[in-house]
Image 1: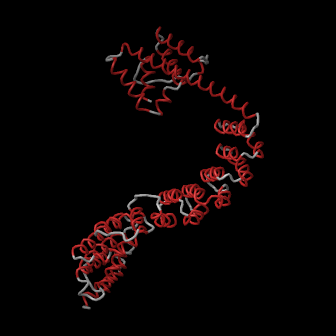
Image 2 (image 1 turned 90 degrees about the vertical axis):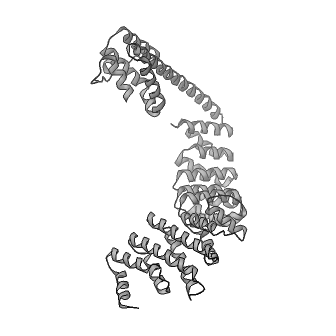
Image 3 (image 1 turned 45 degrees about the vertical axis):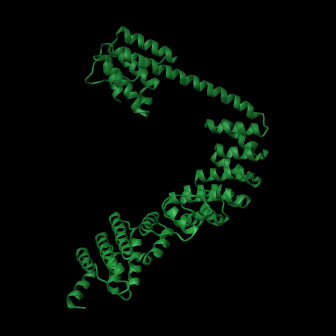
Length: 453
């Protein structure tokens, strides 16, 4: 090694990232194994600019080595090291480094195709179809297609399908799905894998699903694992599902309750009663009703006065199913409540229609009238939640009151009286909040300010 080269290589240990990147660029295209090792190490530099340059240099060296693999001793091993390092960089924390890694792999893959030596990289790429990173799997599958790789078994085909996000629940896909469930860093991928493993019904998934239910850090994965475990394990899954009733997440507990009811697990009655005392939710109620054990009646009856109407109705239906007369009585009461609520909502709907009619009526002196009315209608359609608040009866009454106070015309007074009559209420108008509307006069100030809200 010449003194100049030696001097340059010393700069790889410089605290100046620019100097390190300069040396890494100089190393690009060098074929000696020791130089390749230096580039591989530099691809793990703390500075992303150095890592990106190291990847570009590795691509250049890799391309040349693929063409010279038969002429240079150790070339095949160097290609292996380069590809392995680039695959790791596909999952780098910096997006520009990841992009450089994918481009580098594409360059090497193209060189392998051009010189007819795809065998140098296909096995290594195929092995990474089971990488824990979804991004790596996706990029590897694209590279394998580029070099016309053909899966040699059903399991390899299954791994390729999952890597390309063609999610399926067949026996051939089970190994790849198990790999995703146990190793993938994406909660979404693990959740999807758990659900598909349940559909596949393969007993190989029982223990991995059990481990996911009891130990995965994400509640969505645990919930999916609970559902899948019940499908696969049957009665074997009951102890773990009972344990899941103590999970820290509401959705996981509910999923376990549903599965225990479907499995007709009588031993889960007491744990479900305990869950009902803590959660007070309709899922646990219905699970107990389905199990048909009358020991649950006292706990369910306590929920007939719950503030949540869904819980009250579920409790009433459960008691009726369990043969308790209080269930039918509670259902009749709920029916009365729902009818009263529906009538109240109908009055509110009529009030909103009346207000719109008044607004259109007040627009008789507004020119052009069509523009104003169409603007009101467009606003109603586009505002969604804001429109519902805008047309609330109490807000509408305030607007009519303000209109009457600022412009006591016959129409405004008549509209206010009719509006109050329609609502069926007699509020104390002195206590209503009055607003001032700068820049507008009279009734138009009231209506337009509400419209702009």
